[in-house]
Length: 148
Image (cartoon, rainbow, N blue to C red; front, side):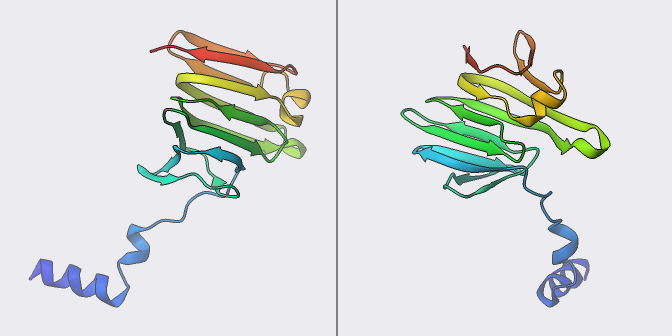
């Protein structure tokens, strides 16, 4: 009986909205990609495509020969090289209320980062976590390689 009730609710569309909460608003967009490159949101990988939105909590992955370029709403530009994986843990760009943060966990691979307005407005707002520590990025370009 319970299974029939759940199936009926799903078919009538009453349960679907409760199970599929909307994604948070986009904080950046894919500007360049070379396959294999993926965005993973809520555990679901999709092939990265130019113009695709990036949300907080997403993972960025590239395979052998892959590359991925992201531009955030403040102008910060991030590029992952081949065989790389990172996760966007936090992003806030609300200068009027002094809410500024970009926190990225870099698991493996290579990263090129060019800070935008976020780092200029708040020098400690941009952080990258690696397996060995946390790097605070101020208003300077950086290159990073994280080994296995």
